[in-house]
Length: 313
Image (cartoon, rainbow, N blue to C red; front, side, top):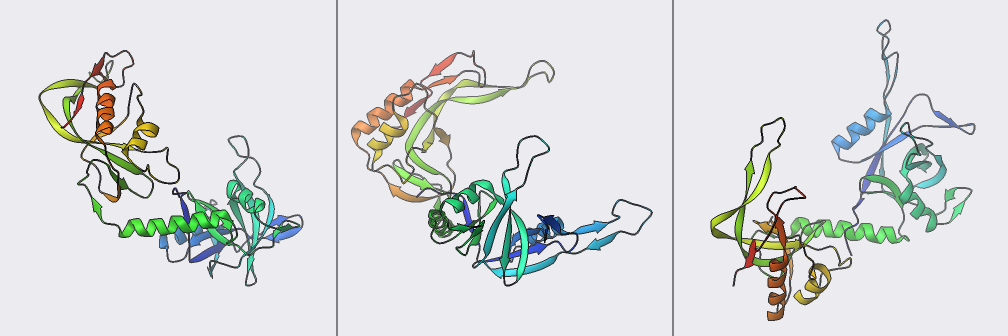
């Protein structure tokens, strides 16, 4: 399963405003700001958002500070009720979160929840008068807050993400890549294509600073140098190709321009080794021969150079 950028927390905290409750349809609600328990910086930011003042910008009066009430919870068993959208943005359009009332252990507060995660909750839950009957937990996806529960597919995705994160943290990393090797980080999968000869080098030609910018040009080397070549793969949502032939068919093909990386690879965990056949190497030779590099980088009218790279045999 591909990484979905979920984060689960064992314990959460909430900084709740202690002054001037928001009145929604005749009911007083206090804004709350969620943070991960044990994360000092996260808690500081939440408390800053929840802190309120009187006469803060009146130099003739003493500023009165209202510190937020801070509560810590096990991240489970919350009751959530959908209230309303956040309304319009000052830049136009509508804000991408909804206001929800949250309750646990007699503590009540209102939080803003990402609308995409909330829509997933609505589709996969039982609601009565806006209240989700399933008990929920807090989670974040791509940094955005939301609610999920164990019956949701999102929960399975989040658990898979947390397991993958733990596995990647423990995995041994290496910069010694081999042809056909699959190397992964938390968010990226790369496959090594093997060593190539690089016949050109990139040189920066300084501009005058006014009318002509610095330019990067390809200049032929006196002698080629040996570098590694690899690609990042994106066409295998649920895993990696079964062998090198499938990679060539689905990811590389015979396009005129193949974007592959060369040089010294980053330290990554090796997770698989693909079988490489002789016909795969012939296809790879064809890809290298078809590739065209611009003599002047970032210039659309620059002459094209072929044969910059050749596979080391």
